[in-house]
View 1 (spheres, rainbow, N blue to C red):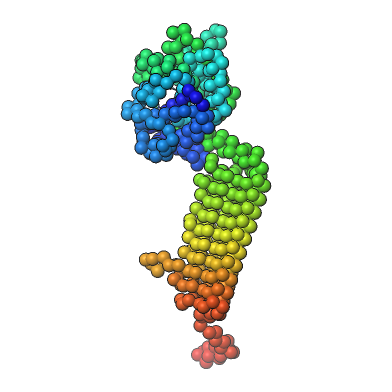
View 2 (spheres, rainbow, N blue to C red; view 1 turned 90 degrees about the vertical axis):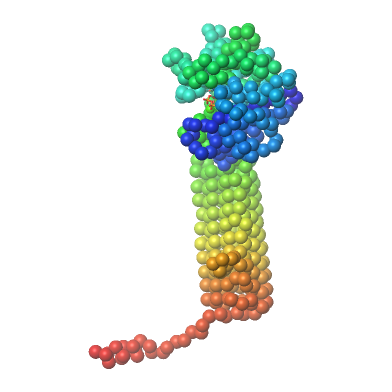
Length: 461
Ligand code: UD1
Ligand code: CA
């Protein structure tokens, strides 16, 4: 989009968050607040996006990356002063500049677009995005004159009791004629309750110069929520959660209990997949079609194929194929790659292992640092003994092998193709393909033991 620019303010520390993490980096549905905003703005096809950084500048830069420009505000003297720091990038440009706060993560490109259109239709030099709420405390209030036109914006701390009763608030998002903005910013003063250079004062200054000032009122207050503290953060999280869940439902995903389902911003889910209550899908998760996920399942940074069922389980940084059955109560730990039609049953833990198509570990096993071939059957209670106290070692079970129940596979060790391991074995040496390995002591039955014991006991009395 030609001649459109954006400035995102992200230099403040966010004292009210009481946090070691800089405010704009706090995640909402798993994604740092500022990234939500940057992504929406990027989708508008804006030419240059300037992010104003200060507190935690390096961390913010690292998170947002190289696709935006940066301006440093080394001292946080207020929002007008913050925008002024973008002058080297933007002051010479003709066009419109949108200014957004880095702490309004719910703002959408559609609303920004409407703001820009309103700005252009009214021929305004500055247009502020406003919203109405019954709980305006903390926000700047929109003061309108008797004709209903915007006169100025007053901050909560500078407001009279009457002004505090105004329910129309400044959302912190604006559209400016770029040239006017940078001229007027220098005229903003800091003679107010906080001793700061307020960006909203630009409105009053332009008004006094008889320039056209406009306001675009959105009817969706939730979208404009400013996150100053953890209470607002939880409200933003709830709103974003609802938005994300609704998007998936509209795309053909069944979510049985949306209030009780937590899906991160970047998750992808295929059609006809059903998500049952208590499930948490976080980070970069991709789930195919016709899957059944949950209840009470946590999946983090993982890829799941089609028609796979994962019940009451935890899956982390792993890949699972199609037609697989996981759980209930399985734990798939990082760097595991599980193939198609595999089964990982209850109380099975898999770590850094490859499990090829059709293999099964149905009950109570630990599979760590292992390569399990196609169609292998791992019997109940089997354990890969991968750790010698210092190093981790590899267990290989080749295609078609059958591992009997309660087997210890002392790594490094290989069980060959189609081989059998008898139940209760402790395997310390490689098992050749197609062999049967029995590694347990022989059973001894002592006949009439009880009778002999009784006789013995009576003799003692
Ligand atoms: C601001 C507005 C208020 C509006 C509200 C909407 C001002 C003076 N007030 O108040 O009218 O209702 O947003 O959410 O603008 N920042 C900087 N440098 C600074 C100061 C702030 O980059 O020197 C950044 C912050 O990191 C933040 C944003 O600007 O992302 C807004 O600052 P904040 O302190 O949160 O302003 P509010 O008090 O919420
Ligand atoms: Ca704020």
